[in-house]
Each structure stands twice: as structure tokens, then as C-alpha cells.
Length: 418
Image (spheres, rainbow, N blue to C red):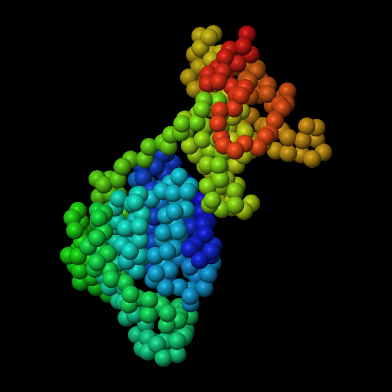
């Protein structure tokens, strides 16, 4: 599993902290997980379900709602409506990063938020709730005797799950404006309801109400003797396995994004997400480039120097393949690792470090020759010779004069190899 930070901006301009878990291979689909009330993206259920889904080929984003975990904002200013907006912001950020969610998963009050947000997310095909309340006002039961104090004073410190939180009456007032029955009836998404009959926090009657209000396709699965927070690893793994198997029936498998950009041209355009994220359209494909979170970016794609290193690595592998085919060498596979470094007092200051792994039944002389040939790949020669860059302002993007035509790179490799 690959896991990386995924920060984005909430509806009120606050910074929200997320964690994007990805499978080692291509993701078959992406899911967005909404944690339980006053929990965080690192809660046992969130982490275990995300990891279990990732092991089954799903990419999963889990994030902290406003004022919780590592997210910005004040929890005292939060409302259920605000949580729904946070969830929508997370989904839009995923779409901007090219990993738009087709599955929403919500735990407890996060499940209610998922049901409320889903109709506004066209890419979402299915929703799974875990121990979710039917009526969002159910959360006020957690306040007990503290509810009256909150209503009378307008603001008070309350204890939830043994931890102190400052809350305002606006949170309670907001709960009254949400008609979950109507939302569920008009969900128009496949729905999976998971609930334990032994849940002491949100009783099983809530699952029955959600299921009855929903239209088909809908499914219900009992989590048997699991507790509300799914604290036992086996319960979280079981829930994740059920969600993964169920969701595959309703989700389209991810397909690579295609582009109509002219061959030989690369079009780069800001996405509006974060300070540096851009969409790159090249070679019939579309992908994101960005800067790491530590440098002020979202960490949603390769950096410009990553792309430059990738160009050198790709050209190297292609050149060796072409040479081996021409010479009839038993080359099975080429892997190239390229790194970039800059040293101010060196000349030139920029350096690329290239390691080449050559698989195949080749003798020492053949391997040495392939390493020599790597020095003659067109991108390598371009970097060594240097290049001119001309810049002009344009009113629209169009085919540029003098742009290398599709397939020219292969001809260059042929010429450089003699």
C-alpha cells in the first residue's frame, strides 16, 4: 500500500488534512471515507477499513473534518451542514487530483453526512454506511444533561467519548433543518447499510429506518456482535471485505484519461486546486503535476523535475530496446531509475543520476555496450547540448509551428544509433 498526505481547502477556506491510501497497482476505483462524530482520519475504523479496501484494489481518501485531528478551523464552529460541505470539498479535491470518488463510505454521523452529500456528487455510484443514525438529531443524545446547558448558555464545554469539546447552540439548531428521510428516498445511488444489532451508541432501529426509506438497489448486512467503533480488527476487515465485494457490482472500473492534444505537444493548465497543481495533457494522456506538500503543494502528482527525470528514463529504456532489437540481443526487460540534484558550486550545477537494470541472458560485453548506448539516447544528448526556449503570449492554445511531429523521437533514436 502507498499512503500520502492529501491536503485541500474546505468550503470556508480552512485547511483540511487528509490521507490518501493507494494500492500498489492501478486502482479499480476510489472511495471517500467520512469518519464518526469527534473521531479523526486516524480512528481505528477509518484506518483499518481504508487499508483493507486498498488491499482489494481501491484507493481511499480519509480526512479530518473541520476542527478535528490535523485540520484547521474551530470545532466549536462546526455543524452537520458544515460536515457535509467538508465532504463535498474532499470529493471535489479528489476529482481535481484525477482520483474522483465513485464510492462514499460513512461511519456513524459520517454515514449520515455521506447520505446527505451523495446527491450532489455525480461521480458517486454507491454509498455504504456503517452504524449510521437515521435522524441526525440522534447525536444530541450523546450530550445527555449537557444539552440543556448548551441550549441555555449558547456555548458550553461538553464531554464526548470522555474528551472535552467546546460546542455552540448553532450545532444543535442546524440538526433540525435536515430531512434525512427525503434525502435517502431520493438518493438514487446503490446503498449498503452495515450495522451491528448490539450497537449501544446508535441502535439497530436506525439501520432499519434507513433501509426502509431507501429505494432499490439497497442491501443490509448485520455486523453481528461488533461495537459501534469497530474496535476489533476482524470487524473492520469484515466490513471492508463486504463493501469491496458489494461495490464492484455498481462501480465502473477506472480507465485512463485520454487527451486530444496534438502529437508532439504538451499542454499544461492550472486546475485551481492548491497553489501549484496543474493538469498535463501529453501523448494522448492526462495527468496531474504538483509540488510536495512540504513545498506548499498538494503532493498530487510528479514535480517538474520528476517529469524531466521521467523523460530521460523513458528515452533511455526506449533507446536500449531499439538497439537490442536491431542487434538481436536477448534483452528481456529494462528498468531505469533517474534522480536529479543541484550543486551551486558545480559546473554545470544540475546533475542527473541514472541507474539501469538490464534483465536478460547477456554477457558482460553486451551489457557494457548497452550502458554505452544509454549515453546516446536523444533526451540525454539534448540535456548535454542544451536547448533554446522561445516564449510568446498567445490568446489561445493551438498547434505550434516547428513542433516535433508524432513519431519523430523514434527517428531521432534511429539516427543517434547510426
